[in-house]
Length: 545
Image (cartoon, rainbow, N blue to C red; front, side):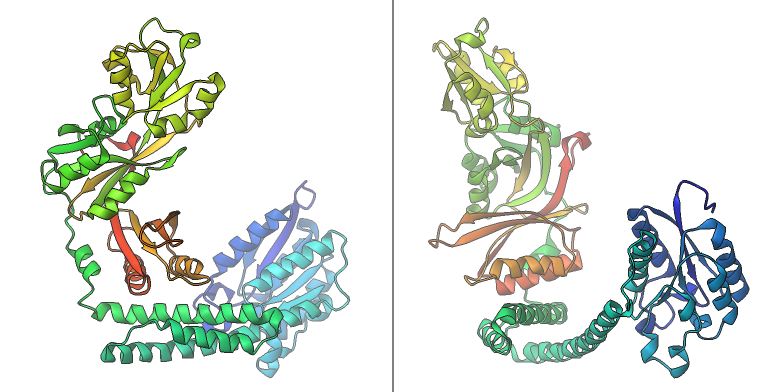
């Protein structure tokens, strides 16, 4: 390092045995490694505008030499001297003479350890001492060093905030020790419930416990106390489900998931809503280039063909990036108990087309599928045209070609326009420059391919305050990434809602299985729509399933 460089520089020094972080007494020093420390401090230093160099040595002389060189090479030092803190006067003298501020760092609270560790011979020559904050000791020391270098004086007693943080750490350690004990008892409760056939969740008891906890705190903190109590009980239930699932051989959904086929038995006949030139047909051709594509006039007819075996699968639009979900398809999936076994994102490029010779000035009315009209509403409003709905874009093109109505145009694909002899008057008329429709492959049997990476389900939550937030927390607790959440009114219960969730998960992932197990036991209703792979259209080179 060269201090004369235009870059501002800091030096992070770690002394004896700190190369063993992550393996050395994790209860005292944590599970993080030296690389974790160096990476985090280097990144944080960059945000303050400093370039950081990190060194570690088990040798006193090496550390002394690095500190001596600091006068010419850096603006400040972050030092965890390890055991040398307690007796190295050579290190003390080097710090006193180095000419740059030094922050003394300790992971553990040295003032509450063995008597010899409470002594720091280097503290008098350091700018401040930060100890007892674990990993954060380094980051707090960095923050204070940068404040000092920026001309902001450190508090007269730099240990005030540190002492408060140490007190919090001590409380947290005690809290987590009790939490560990609580989890051990919770698992005993799970064993008892397993033997007795009792349910894991008892909402009435949880409500009583939460109310009792809340009543013990002043009003300003009562909600926080209740939230903590409910969180503890939710985490405890999760631990119980983990113990119960391996022994539950009667979980019907789990049995279906384990027995699901890895590919459909046949994919020779594919029902697609619409006619030739419809976007569903384009998606079908991409997914199943060798299959027979059978046009179906409606979504319901496409699903019926799958249910009665006339078609092996169906390809239907489920949602659009601009116009939202196709509710009718979701309703059919639920009512007919069909499954999504694959999906593909298809770019949608709408064209305005009309009979040859028609000009834009002559257009009076535009006809298309409601979704296509919604996706191009800005273009339509700009010209002040009337709109009319059609069964799909391809049908709209066919009807326009046969109609005698002057001034009629359609919104359709280029393929549909060409097929029916229409002239394209305007390209790419979507409101959004990135317009995609998600098409799904529908099966009457549950199929989970080996590369499945997405789960879709529908659930209703208990009708009580905070139920949705608690449900979503089940996913975050298990590190599961939610991709989508949407609510729709429950047709069976007034002012109740169903929630449509998609989340990321490889096939048979243990965390996903646990969250499904818990949801099925705690939600009033749960229906799996599919566990499948989602593809981009650019990835398709042939039959995927």
